Length: 447
Image 1 (tube, rainbow, N blue to C red):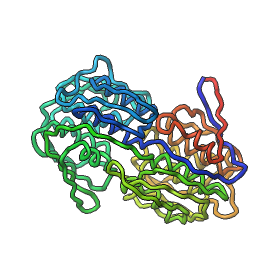
Image 2 (image 1 turned 90 degrees about the horizontal axis):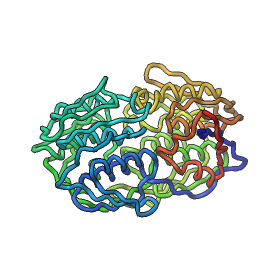
Image 3 (image 1 turned 90 degrees about the vertical axis):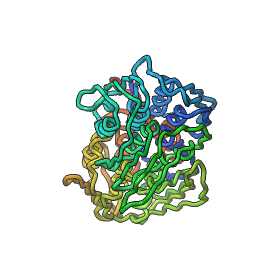
Image 4 (image 1 turned 180 degrees about the vertical axis):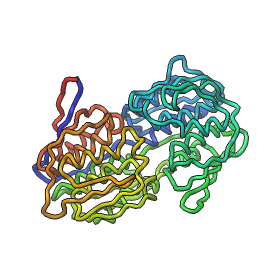
């Protein structure tokens, strides 16, 4: 049996104050960096979703000692000078693409052999964008079509490189920098466009010396190896990608007024917030503070009358995971919202561009795709979304949650074929939605 879910249209405006789970990107990195470092790293606020638990298990297989102290509080005793050891069994990442790509970079720095695997969704996703620079540095892999399962057959004794990723990707940048920790020399990553910088921030927190210089719309990150990371304390703030779903719900349900506490406000992750403000959303951040190298704030959201906007392609790196939920929000706006440069969505956990289009059109929203551009015509004032469709999620957690949020503003409930994967990134999703007044009807269905 597997869980399925039907969104329930709330009978009253959404209200309340909630605190979202820890950031997924930072949680992966905290475990990996702690496993590389000398000493004991204390982590608080760790997201305990399935993706993160796969990364924790991977670190154990490489020899780190990891202990859960309490909810969100984890302890990692790193390998330090001993380095990672060859796992006795394959390292299974489940659906965790970030964990897989970052770990491949870190593991390439050691003279070990590793077999990597993942679920069907992760095994369909391209790994060449990470493997290619690692090969340039001297690592070797056995793989069919640069996809999982694959095997690292040679690592260690890597050479530093100056690398320009063909696609804006924080995962690729991070993998190269992590591999560069064990090299003797200067590793540089030239980013044509800025991506999230959690790796750079956390490397500095763990004692690495690196420089960042802006260049045109991007930057050059320079790391001087070899680097010996030192254990530290990491406090992980709330995940802005998770906050996006609660924000969308409040914007779409008339009369809603909610407060979301402890949200990370990293510039590389703020694209959605900026676009929503341009659309006319009441979205106010206050109580700013700093922790673990990151800015944190509380976000106040009210139901708003929105207007369509053009979202240029240079916004993609700062909100690549948020386009499905932005498209859902655009469905209630006045006029058309045009989202450009979405090719990267085709190679996420599913083809999110095709999936978002299907989600909208099957529920009566006018939308179409032209190349890598998605256009959504909102219902505006006085209109309504029909809803009523059952959506195939293709085992993609963000598509599942986006469909359920659309159901909150639809005449008929929106169903999804499977809700189980939501636990990979946002295990508290259903509880928090209930807390603000939007309970979801979760049912069990046969396979």
